[in-house]
Length: 310
Ligand code: HEM
Ligand SMILES: CC(C)=CCC/C(C)=C/CC/C(C)=C/COP(=O)(O)OP(=O)(O)O
Image (tube, rainbow, N blue to C red):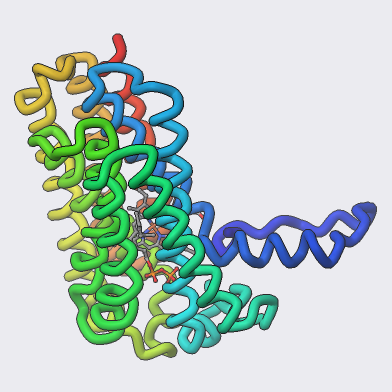
C-alpha cells in the first residue's frame, strides 16, 4: 500500500508484465501495510499465551490465517468504499477506483479469502480463533465500513474493535480460550487506534469532508480532536502498564514494564506536542503523531515478546 509513501519511477526499469500488475492490484486491495502491523500484534499474544515460542506450524498457520482474514476484511472495505475512495486523494489510486480490478472480481476475491482464512484457522488452530476471525471480518466489512464509518463521528472507536481483534485471535489460536492478558493487550491496541487514526484523519480532513465521511476531525474542532487524542494516548499507556500485574504468571515483569513506560512517555509527549501545535495555531503536522503511533505499537509488541521469552 503506497498511498502514504510513493516510490520514484526508475527510468531504467522494464515495465512490469500484465500478470504482475494484476497480482499487484489484488495484493493492494488487501492493504498489506496495515496487515503487517496487525500481525505484529498477533505474535506477542501467541507468545504470552504459550509462555514462550508456540510451535512453528501453529505460528505460521495463525499468521497466514490472520493475513487472509485481514486481507478479506480490507477487500470488502475497498469494495464498499469505492465510491468515496474515488473522491479522496489518499485512496484514489486504489484498484477498484482505477479499474485495475472489477467490483465483481473483488467481491469474489473477498469471499475466497474469507472462506480460506476461516477454514485454515479452524483446521490448524482452534474453532475460537476461526470464529473470532469470521466475526472480525463481518464487523469490519459490514458494521464499520457500511454503517459506522458513514454515519457517526465515533466510527474510529467502533473500528477499534476489529483493529484489535488479531490479539484475541492469536491468544485463542494457542489456548482455545481467552484470558486477562489477552484482554489487556486488546485494550492497548484498541485505545492506541484513536490517536493513530485521528492524526491521519486530521491530515486528510478535506478528503473526508469532500467524501462526506463524518470522521472526528471533519465534525469537531482541531482542539477537541487534539485533546481527545491526548486522552486516548494516556489511556493506552495506562492500560499497557496493567500487563505486568495481569500477566506476571506469563513471564511479564520489569523487562516489559520499563520499556512500556519509556515508549508510553514518547507516545504521550508526541500527542501533547500535537495539541500544543494546534493551540499555537501554526502548522499542526499531525503525521508526526501518526508515524510515532506505529513505531510505539511495534516497539511495545517487541517488548512483550522479549520479556515473554527472556
Ligand atoms: C480504528 C482503527 C484504525 C483506523 C481507522 C486506521 C486507519 C488507517 C488509515 C486510513 C491508514 C492509511 C491507509 C492508506 O492510506 O492506504 C492507516 C495506515 C496504517 N495503519 Fe491504521 N487504522 C486503524 C487501526 C490500525 C491497527 C489496529 C493497526 C495495526 C495494529 C494499524 C496499522 C497501520 C499501518 C501499519 C498503516 C500503514 C502506514 C503506512 O503506510 O505508512 N492501523 N490506518
Ligand atoms: C479479520 C481482521 C483481523 C480484520 C482486521 C480489520 C482491519 C483491517 C482493521 C483496521 C482498522 C480500521 C478501522 C482501518 C480503517 O479502515 P478505513 O476504511 O477507515 O481506512 P481507509 O480509509 O484507508 O479505507
